[in-house]
Length: 314
Image (cartoon, rainbow, N blue to C red; front, top):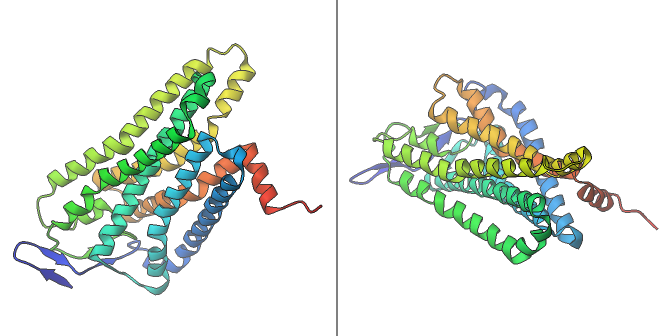
């Protein structure tokens, strides 16, 4: 299973174990995983179609929401088909190139989603702190340019991961105790000094998701300052209500992401199946929940979805 040249050993394939210790329950675990994936596909495609069809929803917040939906679809579709194939057919093998590709798409598009969350926070900041200038600041060209810049940032910042992993020797084992290929899961298989690569991964994670999170916090500090200057309690509650969906999306996405990131590096005493469950929640649950959060909490989207699903016959 291994091919070598003069300086390094590369496996021709990696073997995904799935969830160690729970192999006998893989078939049962695949049922909720598969249902969550189907719901994610349905919810995100419905959201994209609704916003595409309704000109009244082509505002900055909803355009950024479309970008999140597209990136979420890529992230979960990169992982789930192979995961279900592993659970249903015991298809454990993934090629070396396929593993690097899967790892790159998972991490790069996760970072792209993080950037879109930051863009949505900026939209809320402008809408609340500078409401009269919102339409002149966040024009469609500006929104599209921000989306493109954040997309390119995620691709370029994470492109070093597969390049570095390609040059590592994997002479210990080609067995990955996981359901999909992660950066740190592959680094741990290497039989070489990896402190520099680990430091690089940590730096990139901070410069992308960590910095995004700090800037989101800063934007909400400014938003709260503006909100508490309002004289009316009803006005304060109504203004904060416009941020509720965005805050819920951030919590749903960042909490499992940070837990997965930290346990891979520092959580040596956490049971492997717990870490892997959280890692799968990280790529499965946010893509399903994000469009539902906006669909339930946003009256305009909710009305358009109901109209689309249950058209009134004249």
